[in-house]
Length: 310
Ligand code: NAD
Image (cartoon, rainbow, N blue to C red; front, side):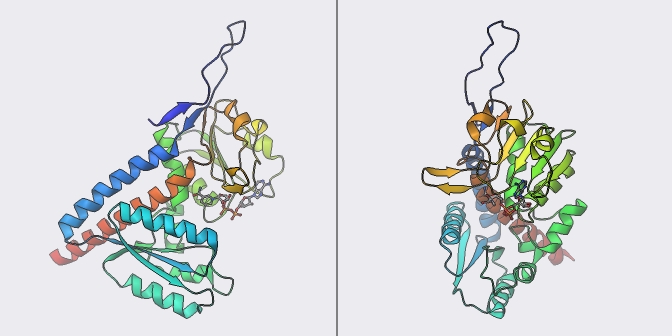
C-alpha cells in the first residue's frame, strides 16, 4: 500500500543482474489512513461517552519552529474530532506555573492527552515537567514511566516518531522479526525508543551514535537502517546494504526546502525501501500523536467503567 518505485526496474546489458531500485514509502498516504482510522474511533467514542476527548497542548515561549509544530498538531487534532485545549505560556513562566498547569490538565477528565512541546526554555527542568504528566495522558510517551514500560515490553503509550517508524515499516511490509536493524542516534525522543521498539519486534538491534567508529561499516550491515542523527546528508550509498529499508527521521530546513539525514538519490539506488523527506516520517509523528490520544481516551473510559462495576 501507498508505495511507488523511485525508478522503473532495469537490467544490466548481459541480463544477469537486476538493478535494485528502492520502493519509496509514502508517509503522507500512510499517515492519512491512520488519521482516518483515528477519526472513526473519536466519533465512536464521542457517541458512546457523550463528549469528545481533548488533546491539551502546552507551548512555553515563542520558538517559531515549536509554534508551527504545535499549530499543526492542534489543526490535525481538531480535524480528527478531538477537542483542542491549548495553553501558551510566556517564555519567562516559572517552573511551578507549568507544573500547576500540567497538574490541572491531569485532573481534567475530558483531557485525554497532554503534550508539552519541546524544547522548553533553559530555566525549566524538562525531565521534571515531563514526569509531571500523568502517564496515562502522556501521549508523547516520554515520561520515565512510559519509557520504562517500553524497555520492559509492557503496554504503554509509545513515543510518536519511533512508533511512526514502525508503522511505516509494517505498511511497507518490511519484515522486522529476525532482521538486523541499525538505528543511528540514541536520543530519548527518537533513537533510543526506536531501537527499543525494533528490539521488541524481534529485530537484532545495533545503536550507532556520535562516538561510533566507522559508521559506514556498522550501518551497512543492517537490513533496516533508521537514521536519526540530525546531520544533513550524513548517510549515503556506502552506509546502506543492498536492498535494505532506510527510514530517514532527520528534518532540515534549507534554502531549497526540507531535506533529511540521508542523501536520497544515491541511497535510493542501493536501498530496497526508502522514506523521502518531506513526506516520510514527518507526517507519521502527528498521526501517531492522534492515535495515542484516542487510545488514552478509550483506556480512561474503560478504567472508569471498570470502577463503576466494582
Ligand atoms: P538529537 O540531537 O537529540 O540526537 C542526535 C543523535 O544522533 C545523538 O544520539 C548523537 O549521538 C547522534 N549523532 C550525532 N552525530 C552523529 C554522527 N556523526 N554519527 C552517528 N550518530 C550521530 O536529535 P533527535 O531529537 O533525536 O532528532 C534527530 C533528527 O530527527 C533531527 O533532524 C530532528 O529534527 C529529527 N526529528 C524528526 C521528527 C519527525 O517528526 N520527523 C521528530 C523528531 C526529530
